[in-house]
Length: 157
Length: 185
Image (tube, rainbow over all chains, first blue to last red; front, side, top):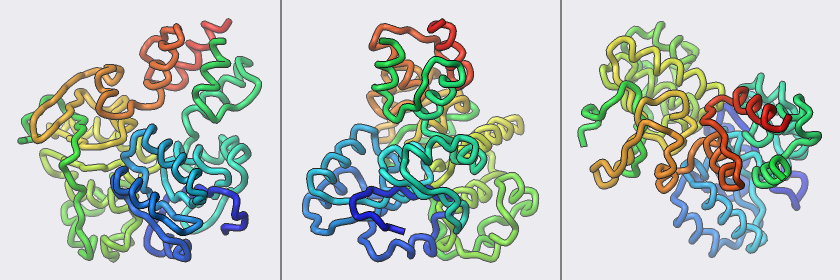
C-alpha cells in the first residue's frame, strides 16, 4: 500500500479497529497522545516513517501545522489514519476505505475532487474543497482550492 | 463540577480533565442492556455487534456503543464522542441529540471538535479546573477561539472579516455559498 517512499499517506477509514491497524504494523505507530508529548517524541525519532492513528484528534490547527513542519525538518514521512476528512489535506496520497476495502485512491488533488463518492461514503469533503467546488458551480471559481488562505485571497482580491 | 447543573438541553463543554468511557474487554451485550433492538437502531449499529468485545470494536463503533449504553439515561454525558466518527455520523447524531431532548433528557457533549457543536448545542461552556471559565450561546463568539478551534464555517467567516469582508453568521454551506455569490455578482 505504501509504494512511494516520498509520499505522505492519509488513510480515510470508517472502521479503524485492531485488524485494520495491523496492516500498518511494519511502521512505529503513535496513538492519541498530547501535542507536547508528540513533539518531544518526534524530536528524538530515528525512523523514516511513522503511522499516526487518529493522533491529531483534539489538536488545534496550529499544533498540527507545527507537527507537519517538524516532520518535514526531520525528514520523516507519515501514514495518517483518520476518520476526519479535514486531515486528508495534510497528505500527498489518499487511500479511502469503506469497511475493509479500498474504494478510492490517488493523489490528494484527484481524490478530494470525487465529491459524489466521498459524500456518498459519508466522509464529506474538507470545508475548503467543498466550498470551492460549490463555487465553481456558480462560476465564482474555475478551480478547486486546498488551502483556505489562498481561497480567501483569490475570492476577495 | 456537577455537569447536570449546566443550563441548556444540548450542551457543549470544552474541558481537559474528562476521560472517554472505556469498557475494555466487556461484551457489548453486557453494555447495552436496555431496549436493545430499538437502541441499536437509534445509534445505527448491527445486532452482530452484541457478540463482540468492546476492545475489538472500531473507534467509531465504540462511540456508538457508549452512546447506546446511556441513551435511556436522563443525562447523557459523552466525552470526545466525535472521535472516530465520520461527517455523516456527526450530522445524524446531532439530529438525534436534538430529538431526545424532547423526552426531557439533557445531552452534555464534552468534546474537542466544535463541528459537533455547530447547529446542535444551545450553550457552550469552557471549564477549567472544574470551574466555569467562560460560557456563551453563540458559536461565532470570538472569545471561544482562545480555547478551541472553531468550526470551519465559522473560522472562514472570521478570516473573511480580517480581510474586510463581513459575512452574516451562516452555519450551513448552502447559505454561505449563496451569500458569496450575491456579493460577487
